[in-house]
Length: 398
Image 1 (tube, helix red, strand yellow):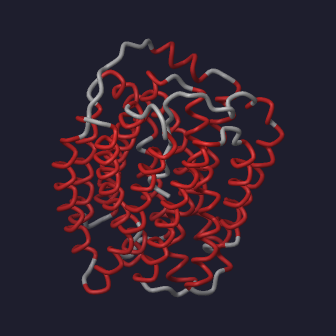
Image 2 (cartoon, one colour):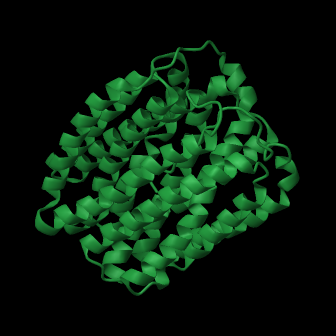
Image 3 (spheres, rainbow, N blue to C red):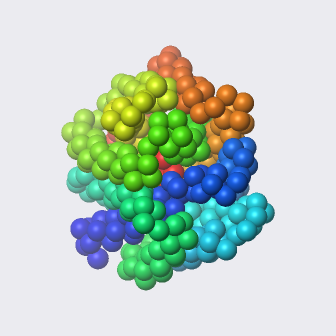
């Protein structure tokens, strides 16, 4: 299979999976609220979805290095089918809790396996462009999923949305059979430990965790904020996600091209954090469809820079042959942040409403950017990217 076919196959699977995820996930907090769940329980369910990924990501990453990642991708798809089926059939909190646990396992298996597998096949020229195409496919799924979901909910109910998701996962399972697999490698656990036990890696883990908290806030709060605080309809909420997702896809291609021609990227990373934090904090000040869309478009400029450059930094820290295990560890740390953000967000919502979590998570990103700037010397050298395959830690739950 040549390089173009590899990119097309992986991008197609990535698009459809994230399309299904956000077809359901964006409207899930609204559905849970409509059927009577309190904000703290909604936050717990969303948090559990991320929390269950934490203990699994490292083992799954190691497994993806040593066994067939394509089989793992397919296992994740089947568990996602069970997740949506469980949401359809659940009648009480514990039923939804079990469904979210299964869904968390499914998305973990899929995410770790498809990312580590894809980036093992990326080498040669135009690497930034190839990564940009893969990320763009994910953000198109992120955008078109909510748009489609909003249109369906305009005429039907959540159960129709669930059935649509189930049917699409079965199509995706068939499509995933064409993914190019990779050969297993022999690597000792202590080698992974040596990869992690470095000062620059420890700072990078802190960065990933703080970024995760703002993703957790967005997952839990953004849809309810747009509906209840700003007064948007479900189709308008889907429109916001749709336009933002397409915008992110375009940005990924641009940033990928920048990566191909410019290798000293520290200040881009710094400004990405600043822009993301400022417009995260001011999101609750929006009063209309146009204003919330404007804030989120500016916010995602920062997010796009940070998401892409995270992977570029990753590529300089970890060796290519152990990308699976190390990718799993990084994703686990991000999930710690997402879970913490979602759980705290649920508690703050009940006491203070939707505004405070956005403000606090935005401020944390700005503070993180200043801290990172003060530690620039620790990262000296890893920001000068050399010619080697790169891995991008994609925000599948943004």
